[in-house]
Image (cartoon, rainbow, N blue to C red):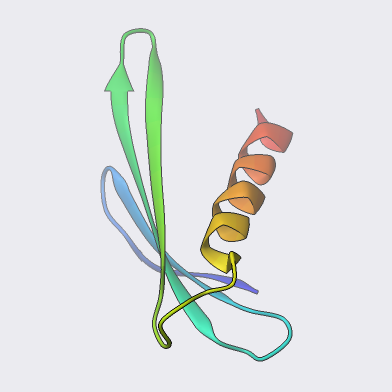
Length: 71
């Protein structure tokens, strides 16, 4: 359900399709050096509608879980 749309030196632009209705959400991940490690900032935005019923939050939580699983 995740797709990488573009990659730059410190930024990923992803899309994620919701499983039930198939709406597409845009997710931007920015990575910055922070001391000996890195700081990761992520934002999720729905393309359509006024509300997301919590889907943007779930997108970010799913992303963090995937990052933790590989680190």
